[in-house]
Length: 567
Ligand code: ARG
Image 1 (tube, rainbow, N blue to C red):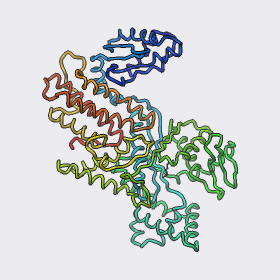
Image 2 (image 1 turned 90 degrees about the vertical axis):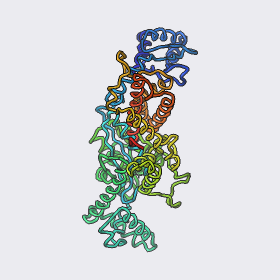
Image 3 (image 1 turned 45 degrees about the horizontal axis):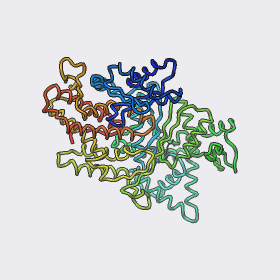
Image 4 (image 1 turned 135 degrees about the horizontal axis):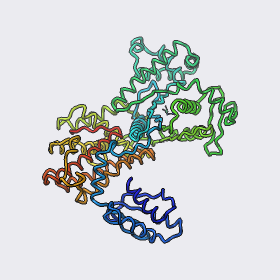
């Protein structure tokens, strides 16, 4: 931010030869301290064992000469309280409105990031437990793209393993000809349940037969391989139906099976590097020194496991994309798995940044989600219910089905994204769909209100560039009242909120920002007449409203939430 540089410049001028990379200007915690503050005079004084108040005063004196500031004060032991000038603020607003990416810094240009998310297991319908990875992943994907990163969104399907022996056997013997012809994921799920139940029979014949089907598949038997492929295609088709509803798009669908052939090579490499060792017939990587226990990379029966597969996946992604980082999104029960294989990958020499977003579990209307409780709701059903409930809200205002989808799905997504991903959350219909409070519909409604205001004023977002507040002013913005100023300062924080959300991998940072912004907008809107004001004031305020609308639209887009212009 420009302010950082100005204040840093004052430090450099006052104390030549020192490094002031750490100097930061942050929004003031309370308006009575001004608009911004900088507490780094204290930090610096401590380092050089100087009087902090003296350092602060020296910097303040230099800053007073800058036209950017209307007021510079030294408070307490050396805090700098900064009040910006109206001209500066107006010019910054114009910069933000006319910049290409709403001033989101393009820090990722030329860098590749792989985002590994959603990743359901094939041959099963997606359920309520899949929402978090899908929704958080989609937001992370969009946020990184907005920062200029070249993102590869990869769906790491669970498409290999013992369940396919059970499925193939079940397909052949538990389904009718008609079911086989019109195969769906629901039928696959049914045939798995039937076949798995038979595999529990005491004589063990069925179980043995499932095993043989699996071995045949692993050895490349044509018929079994064709069946497996069909199961996967049908599953992806069904998943994509959900992703279309949610506005989620993947660049690749590389499931675990994609890495099968590379796993023996990975184990060989681990042995050669002296990282793997024999233990009770299995091959392990001992991570006890790193306090991460032991990771098995080859089981005693010769089979590989999840860790081996993820290491092979890293090898492949690094060779193909050379990504700057790889981000994985799963629930936090997999934390240890990720810590272990990240550590092994580092020991193998990979320098890529690995990050796991391990999100907390979700409960539904105050109850834990479990198969036994019978509340393992299908994602499809949850989305239908969201649409139905949203339709109830909008139908009297002439709302369409499409609008009900935008609001219903947006509510489901926002109720997740407004929480820190690392916490457990409860999904609650009333809260998710509330028109007041921190909800998706509240923010969508705020956007629609801006649209109808613009409509009433007879301008739209693209033509608002022609609105001027007066002939001789350098900026068409003209911030005057306190509530207007609060909103203006908050709007300037948008790029920072996007950067911060990516830095700490929390879309909730952006959701919080948008909610606070919408609240400040609402208080500005209540306190400041717009259409009834004289032309210059009206135009300046309309532009501020339009800027708020643009920030809100972009922010919600980054969270994967649509912004209908009428609600
Ligand atoms: N399919 C896995 C599951 O359902 C998630 C995969 C996550 N990605 C990865 N590379 N391990 O638990």
